[in-house]
Length: 137
Image 1 (cartoon, rainbow, N blue to C red):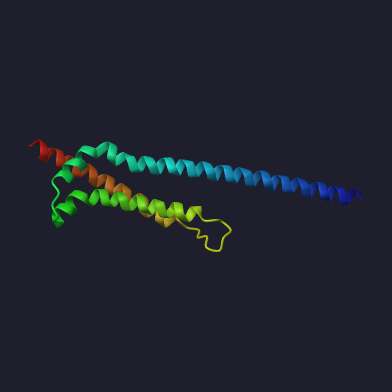
Image 2: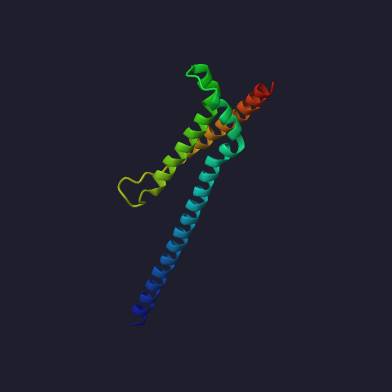
C-alpha cells in the first residue's frame, strides 16, 4: 500500500518536472527566435543605413553591362543571398519538431548565410570607398 502511494507520488513528481523542463525549453526557443528576428532585421537594415548614398550613386549610373553589374552590385547580391540562407534556416526551424518532414541541421545554411553576408559586407565597404573617391574626384 505504501509502496503504491510512493510510486504514484514519484510518478506525479516526474511528470511535473518534465512539464517544467518543457516549459523552460519552449521559453528558451521563443527567446532565441526573437533574438534571431531582431538580428535578421538589423542585418537587413544595416547596409541601407550605412551605404544608402553609395547605392543611390551606383543605381543612378545604371547600365546593362556585365562590368557595371559585377563591380557595382556584387556586394549587395552576396548580402541578399546570405539573407536568403538565413530565411531557409528560419523555415527549417519553423517546421514542427515531431513531424515527418522535420529536418535537423540548418547549420550549413547558417554557415553559408554568415559567409556570404560578411563577404558582401566587406566588398560593400570597398565599393563604397571606391565610389566615393571616384565621385569626389
